[in-house]
Image 1 (cartoon, rainbow, N blue to C red):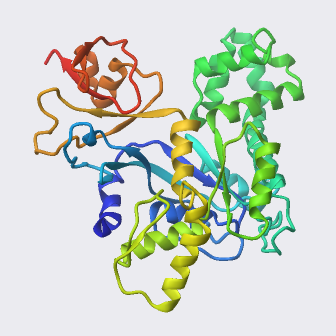
Image 2 (image 1 turned 30 degrees about the vertical axis):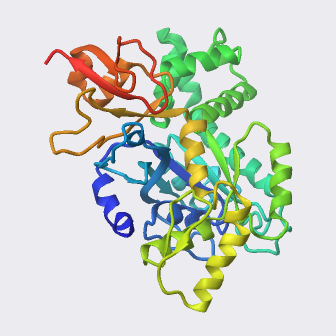
Length: 415
């Protein structure tokens, strides 16, 4: 497993993958979380704006591999697999720590918010111990209420969207009225760079009771309500409750669950995950990300042994999802964005032309059809689609067949 971490990133850097943004204040462990997820070479320091330009790297979602069903061993083209546990790549970006007033440009906030344009989802890393104040400065644990950090970041993102919406609003709304352009089409032109669609905006307008209201008559409250709703739709967010091993953090975490029942909040220790990944890379231990145990295989100093034992006793044994870092990424992709993993394969042959077994795994939106999958693999397969075969059941299905988590599908096309 050791060479895996060093070789994966060149293989995946050119792929078009979903993008997950890592956001938060300075000093909450944001860059540590990013490095623990990707092993990218980033600066980690206890001062604001240690991250200036956005960092990018490859993280992975963890799934049960389809190779176990067929009693074989896969050979991933990208990502990796350990004992029938598959790790599928996703792009991750880490932007500089945000401060209150970021949407007004404070702390270079607008520049860093704009770095998030292409993100499909956001991981908001907070210091759940309450040991980082509103400016991103280290303070004694328990000093800061982490609930305020959740509210602060959501507000900054809402105002960022509002700023985009209000830019040249009077001229924009007047032009829409004069040309009789459909409202959803006009608004989508403003926000398409953030991941909106005509249908998405049309549904939001209906839900908010704004579908029949002329843009020129929208109030400030209407503008803010629309901006907030669109932000929630195009930049869904999961909370990584970091530093869970610090005194008082667990109590804060339980309180956050009660205060924010609609948010996904996952306890984690990014520092512990990074330590385990680095120990694995240096052949000290064997560790599968997301597991709640590891095995020592190399020589350790007393200091290293004590540190790893602390992680085992205080983090891994107390959390069924290990350090929580892998769980955050999985929850972001599978629960927040509602993607499912689908493997291409053949009923009579699971290998590609190079002899690799089940070499690929694609992440598709839940609700995707066999035809959607064909287009995902290659445009020609979609355009010349005849039928598909559920390889596990050997059942022939049509183009409207809904795919399920972990399906293996063969596409039959008119070559």
